[in-house]
Image (cartoon, rainbow, N blue to C red; front, top):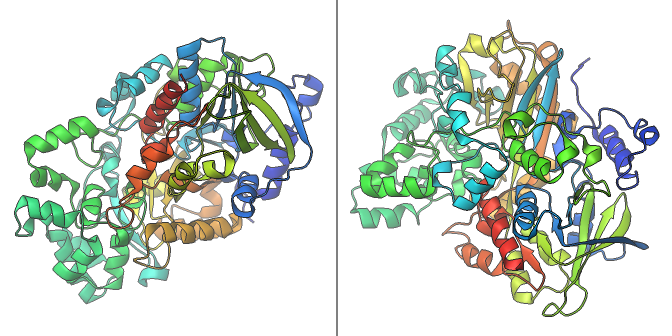
Length: 638
């Protein structure tokens, strides 16, 4: 019988319900003592991310157009600002509003989840008293050198010193422990369980310090369980280059950004082997979002597609243009741009630092470093005495002006908490939630803006973190990272080697550690438009129960790791499955939805006393985009 720690659906729901039934701001110790002490969201395991039940009311609103939520309680609460969404964008909006208008301004932040941060989620795994931190979504401050002063200023204001990461991130960890890259071919998809010490694609490039393949293309290809034809095609692909195409640069640029990568594979390189195409389709993961079967050559090139080296864009663009682009935008897939600005819990530290600034009593620590090991007291988030209140498990279902949007000075916000309906009032509202939901929530929104917002979609993602009692099996395999094109989780790796704020990453193979397993659930209909594949992948992901995921993880890790040094029931202590049905913002494609940028600009326009933030409005999943969009939304409120 497995003894793995997890919180299944019923237990998790009961614990959340127990907290949400408390009166807002309850501080009665007799009442608080009756709550299960494990109701500390970062330590919960099992099905997390958008936890079961968190989207129920939103789906009833969007799918069934539900409007009758029973009797409504009009709370005697009025705020200068109400923020819908407690992710990094929503928290940043609240922070910017106080910076602009004063720290005495009353703010209410509403979020439908049982934890704040949105995708910037913190996972804690404890093995024999040793706590391992890892991220459950948003992971890194990407390319800070290329970010706006708005973003950099906010990071400074909440106590984040980017220079500290140059020491905090141990770039020699992988080399010192002889941990490299590999690809795991599973028996179910490829006919045999086989580990080859070669990543084949370039997804591993974002893990700073991870050595490149230790064996040649030829040797690696020969070790794969592919057919003779498949091996020949894979080797040809690995040894080819986009620069081999005999075209002037102008024609080449036009070609690679308007031609499907799979058409290039089939038409130019003659690749038709199912195994090679499976490897190619799963080679970019969350760097891209959709599978490469619907990516252009350029998109696959920039995100590390099979047979496409991102470093070759330097030659393709030319040195001067490449350096200019790197300075302006960053590029985590090339060696020039270090991917080291990563807290042990990812960007959850940014969210926690923002909350701490606005709700000082929530935890110990004066800067981001000191917050790394701080255990937040969630009972402090929604106290009536707070100037800023953060109310979790609260799904907003209606936002409307009290009068005409052109002249109203008041906005009414209805939300559902513990199946009861409440209404609060604000002088202004920032919608920092999923843009596609906004037309269903803001009832007086203009039709053109409503149509534009409905074009936005999100990529389904799953970040599964696993607490291991040791990493001896990884040391024996000399593996710090593995692509797994035949599994639900297409990539897995040991967490980033970061020590900061008193937290030390795992040092020795006998020490506990956390590993990250990443899944982009594509649709089964290869070549179908990305939006259709997202829907299919999302439905399949949400239909699985914890037992289904545990079975998959058992087969994956057992098939990949050596049996003499790894036993699933013995070595796996805990599993946290962060399911994000609506994960990364879909950035659009010249081939499938070229009008998405125009729609984003139309959709984010201010509407009376309601403005719109979130990374959806910037068509990017990066934290800095969420921050910049929040700043714009607050500025538009005046």
